Image (tube, rainbow, N blue to C red):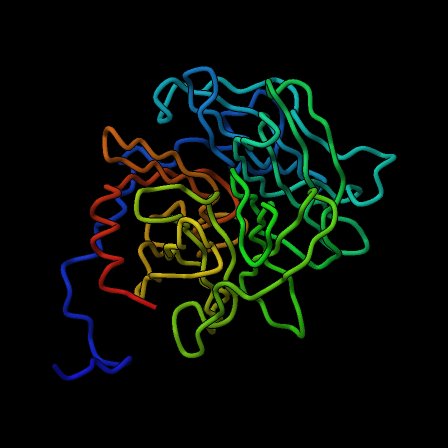
Length: 326
């Protein structure tokens, strides 16, 4: 059989409807907030006490961000929003002086706690910070993990034995090195000392994700590997365009990317994805996977202003990815 060339059209089954927008999007807007804010976007997502919990990035009217909890029984509507922030910049923490942004949540098996990775912003640039919680009321901040400039990070929920005899934590993140913005993977024995750094998902010259890529949701464990959604950026004459892609990592060796979507799975189209502080942005940041329902709920920031929801069948996404081997 003739080998397919990279620039040939993809004649595989339809992929455009793999992620379907919730008809009543956006599901959360600044007008829903119990106190005055500018924008509510880029939430982390997890299941907590039989509810879906979002840890929402909230930007105040000074331009600084903090993180606030919102919960819902169905993860779609009737959101209960806390009246005070959960995590906020503290005056005595140097790296937090310009705000906290873009969290991701995993249940960390080793610690038996929820681990929250988020971006702390200061004069030195953005860094990845870590906090633990058991109840989303009290938080144990552990400080920054790696030097700036770094964003778009999540831990995996369990350790791996990759290239080392001892199990190690793994972190997906997006440093800027030599002006390049690829997705990286790093390992640590103790969540303090990081090494074995490597590029995991690079940008693709000429493609829709040619200028920057960054982790979207936390890694999702599936029978076929770790499913990750990511954002890809292409600079255009009218500004940066943020779209959504997906990739699958090997279950026991997350350094190995087995599949990567060739097309984008979502692109800005709805009015609320174009009308906001930063038009043309879809930024996936949290997901809930229900294997029994074969459903993925994907939560995303829209135009750096509000929160949208898209849903899809995991099996359909998996079938599509099998047409996109790396």
